[in-house]
Each structure stands twice: as C-alpha cells, then as structure tokens.
Length: 258
Image 1: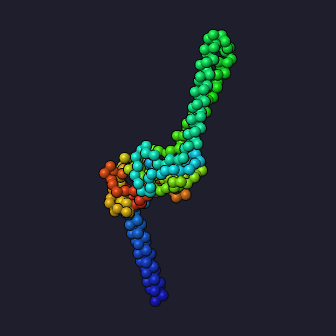
Image 2: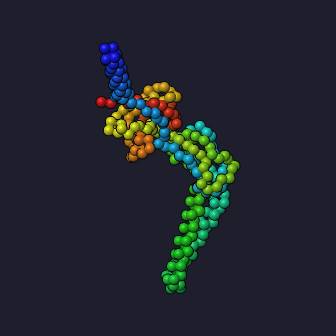
Image 3: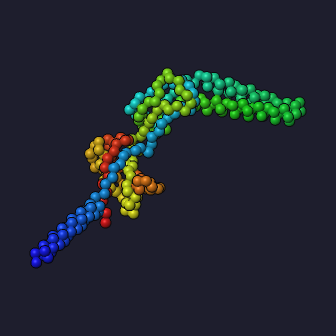
C-alpha cells in the first residue's frame, strides 16, 4: 500500500513543479511583451547635411590658408590660395594670342572686301581665333583653380595641409562642416517599419548635453540591411536646438507601440 501512495505523491510534486515553471515562463513572456509595447529605443548620431573634404584641383604650392581648425567662415570666403604665377603668365599669353588672331581676322575681312584675299584666308583666320580663344579658356580655368572658396557657411574641422607646402592634384586640403544643418541618423529594427512614418515625432537625448529634443522623422532609408535587419532613419532637429556638433551621439525613445 505504501508504494502506490508514494508514487502518487511524487506525481503530484512533479505536476506542481511543471505548473510553476509554466507560470514563470508565461510571466517572463508577458514582461517581455509589455516591454516591447512600452519601450522602443535606439542609438543615433548627429550628422551635417553640409560637410565636405576640399581637395586640390591642380598641383601647386599653397601660399595662404587663412582659417585654422575650429574657425568659422562664410560662403564665398577664400579658404585656400595657391601660387598662381605660372598659370597667370600662361593665361596672359593666351589672351595676347586671342588679340593677335582677332586683328588678323579683321585684316583679312577688310582684304576680302577688296577682293585681295579669298574666302580660304578668312576661314583660316577664323579657325586660328577660335583655337586661341579655346586655349585662353583652358588657362582661365586653371587660374580660377588657384583659389578655393567656401561652398557654404561653416567651420573648419581640420587642416589636411599647411601653407608653403606643395601638394599634388587631388590631395585633401581642408575638412569643413556646417553644424547648422544637423540631422539625426539612426538604425532601427526593420520590424518597426510599419509604425514609423515621415512627420512623426520622437525624443532624442544627446549624450553630451543630456537635453531631450523633440525631433521629427524626415525620411526612411531606401533598403533594409540583410545582415542586421535594420533600417536607416533620418530626422530633423527643432529650430531652437543649439550647442550641438556633428558627431554627437545619443539615445532615441519612441512612443509606445499600439
């Protein structure tokens, strides 16, 4: 009689243990689901729409770089100036050739009016003038490349070269950025795609300031990354945001999912 009773007791204990384990699993699953519906967070970084790495379009010696790291400049300011004496001399010679061919053409036209030369001489003079003008335009472009002007208002991030250095064509010279054109860039799970639309708002807190900002979703990425199953999201900062710099990172918190 003792063995059946003992088996019954063991069976009851096992059933109770299984029930408790099932309750724990259900409770843990419920907590996770509740967290998913109440908390959606992601990490993001501030990037500027207007930023550039300025490079040399010709080989030459730098004679002036008036702005140092961290200094502000305005659109149109000369940021880099090269020694342009050789290119300027070539341009001057080309302009003189244009004037000479113009005089030759006018002279041939006058002679043609008097039937002293034929149409061939006039056409040849016109071709020489066109060639001289084309060569002058080439040298003019080179002269314009002797200085680099700021494409937008901004700030110098870092000099990649220094005055008096000779650089090759294509060499990096100056990194610039406009911190007034900052946007929030972050990667979110692709499963959020149906819940995020341009125009919606969420909170972004930069680590460096700790100041919460209400930002607006501007656009979503064009594709989902196959490896991480994430989607790029770009958002705009409020107009009164200040004290922010490109490269700052922070946390984004989204409203609870329905």
